[in-house]
Image 1 (tube, rainbow, N blue to C red):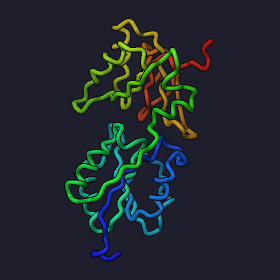
Image 2 (cartoon, helix red, strand yellow; image 1 turned 180 degrees about the horizontal axis):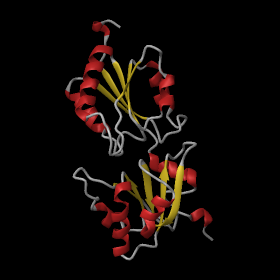
Image 3 (cartoon, one colour; image 1 turned 90 degrees about the vertical axis):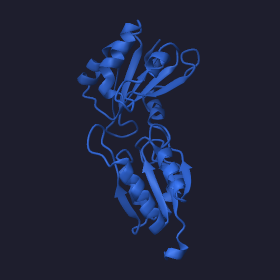
Image 4 (tube, rainbow, N blue to C red; image 1 turned 45 degrees about the vertical axis):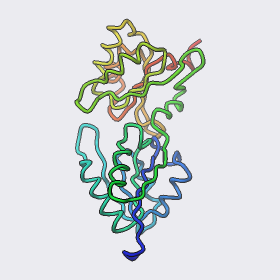
Length: 244
């Protein structure tokens, strides 16, 4: 593609919860024509096989609590590759706009005159249904709180105490390192007996999960050898399939 014919554009695309078949048809078609793919740690690498042989594929992942590609570097790559090659796909695990910083990248691209597009993905909490955990259920849960376990400053989200006052299902992303604090918060409020599930690698063959009471959350994680990234789901929807 000659420089004069290049149209700089960024597609922020949800790769879904892990299973490569759980992406949208739109995302599949876009990967087939992408010139560059900047892909996440949580995006299934099998999706890269959909791209053309001449598509440039660049890993910009972030391992939880480990090595990572700085956000500033990702922004630099978006700008460089969009201007030099045209269609850039930013492939992000789950849904890019749910704790994924996808909109930050969209705003950056727009500030530099790059056309931007968003393609939703199935967020990981929706994959809890594969373990017979519906996020809502009539007369059991009337809503969902999706919160981050760790805020930017490293503290537990204050929204957790607000969520506990409702009968909604509470889904905690990035909360594994806060397990003891989460359990204690529920116990202090007299809600330690509420069911909890921890789901790791939902939708994948090597998935792991455990179910118990939220007051026992740290022990549950330890006993079942669970680690991040994983979701913590708290509410009476957990264990519905086995309840009588």
